[in-house]
Each structure stands twice: as structure tokens, then as C-alpha cells.
Length: 176
Ligand SMILES: CC(C)(COP(=O)(O)OP(=O)(O)OC[C@H]1O[C@@H](n2cnc3c(N)ncnc32)[C@H](O)[C@@H]1OP(=O)(O)O)[C@@H](O)C(=O)NCCC(=O)NCCS
Figure 1 (cartoon, rainbow, N blue to C red):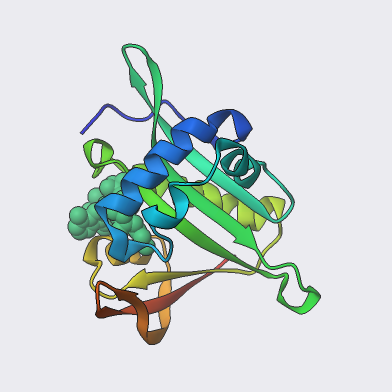
Figure 2 (figure 1 turned 45 degrees about the vertical axis):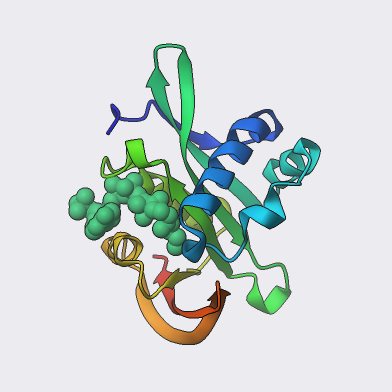
């Protein structure tokens, strides 16, 4: 565990290298936790990663930074997207939740998600935020339940990884 993160902020193009390193670490460490894969994202040039991080009206990526002797280090990430079709535009979704092992159990994922939910409610005026979580991922399910997400569905065979099917809980948080 590291000391409490010094900052949570929306990432931008300048964070592309640090984001890509942490994202790939997550995809390699726990491939069953993400729909994407390190094989698909490793070849992405930094300009493409920078473009992904460009804050926009329908997408942001938040980062949590820990103080280190040589400066701040990105140790946690959470993506937030919003639907763009008129009749779906009251909804958003959380993706790409990852905290580096040395920064876990220190409240960082909870803080990042609270920031994301605050942005969804206040900046975007959303009514609900959805996410999916592997049914075997007890830690992430506990995290989301603690923040008020409720399970509303189960997709069997959501992921096929190394010949094995993984199911996914679909969860929703209704915003006040
Ligand atoms: C799941 C993950 C994001 C949690 O990050 P974190 O910063 O350690 O989480 P927090 O410290 O904010 O924990 C908040 C709550 O989540 C739950 N939680 C987190 N880690 C847990 C664990 N290992 N076991 C059980 N509950 C856990 C607890 O309810 C915790 O509250 P508490 O500390 O009061 O008990 C992190 O373990 C991770 O990156 N895992 C690998 C990637 C992953 O699974 N991503 C989610 C994809 S859907």
C-alpha cells in the first residue's frame, strides 16, 4: 500500500504514456476483468491513446496519482462514457477500472468512482450509470455494491478467455 493519493483528475493527452503503461499492466494482470486485451492495445501508438484521453462531452478518463519521491505516479484509472442517442442520453457507463496492486485497499477505486459518478450527475445530468463485472471478481463486486450499484442482469458467456467462458453481472447505479 502507498500513502493516500495526492490527486484525482481528468486525464488528457499529456498522460498518454503513463495511462498506456498502467492500462497494459491491468490487461496483463487480470485479463478476465476486461473486455479488451493487451494483445489488442499494445500496438496502439501513443497518439491514439492520447486521442482516447482527450476529455469530451461524452467521455472522460479519471486518474489517481500517488506521491512518490520523484514526483506523482499514476496508480489508478476509471473510464466514464455517456450514450449519445437522444433516448439513451440519460445513461452512462463505467469501464476500465484498475488500481495498481501497491495502491490497493486504500480507498482509491472508491474515490475515482465517486468522482466519476459526481461528473455523471453534475456535469452531464445523467440519471443512471451502468457497468459490467465478471461474476468471479468478488473484490470489484464488493466495491460497486458499496457505492450503491445493484445487479440487474446476468450475461452468461460474456467473455471467452483461453477457451473458458466467463459470466458477467450487469449493474446499475441510479443517480439522485
Ligand atoms: C477492484 C479494484 C479496482 C479495487 O481497487 P481498490 O482501490 O483496492 O478499492 P478500494 O480500496 O477503493 O476498496 C473499496 C471497497 O471495495 C471492496 N474491495 C476492494 N478490494 C477488495 C478485495 N480484495 N476483497 C474484498 N473487497 C474488496 C471493499 O468493499 C472496499 O471497501 P473497504 O475497504 O471498506 O472494505 C482493484 O482490486 C483492481 O484494480 N483489481 C483488478 C482489476 C479489476 O478487477 N477491475 C475491475 C473490473 S470490473
